[in-house]
Image (cartoon, rainbow, N blue to C red; front, side, top):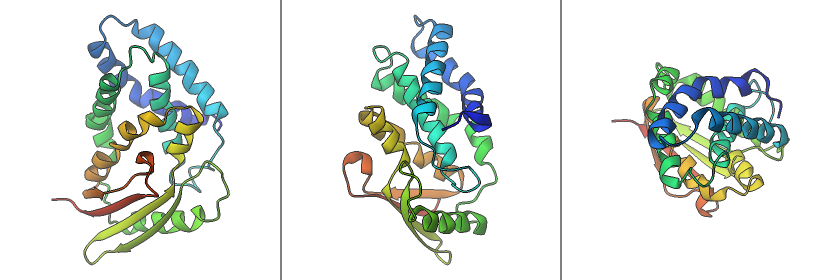
Length: 207
């Protein structure tokens, strides 16, 4: 992938939350040195990861950069970034004001959102990009609810590329709050990261 504007945006948006949390969790860590090391790893990971197309054509394209940022956080210092520390970083990002502002006013069941999934599902089945998601989508706005069944996942593919599949269950928890911020509730019984045949997203109206 090319770093580009979106590739530079994620570290800029997430940096303060991530490094403030890390400084609290690991007070002995040299944060400046850690950040420098992570950014070097992040840029290298982005460069060696094949593209899934532009943001305009692929709704999941930005997620590839987010995944690289998360994985590079661990790779920057695997000895100190324990699973507890990694989970804390994910939680800090999910609970951040930045994340809440990003999703403010968005609705899971808005027609624009639904149409995006419809187009995305149709496009994904063409399998133009080896690193891309492949998924089925169905919905019923009278309930309202929708189903996204991921047969292939771009984040899992990066994890395999980087030999970091053990981090996937920790990354997948981000799906719950992001859907909640859009007024939905995620019900999921299977994930590709757990070795299942799919990720079965069932999204209903949040309480």
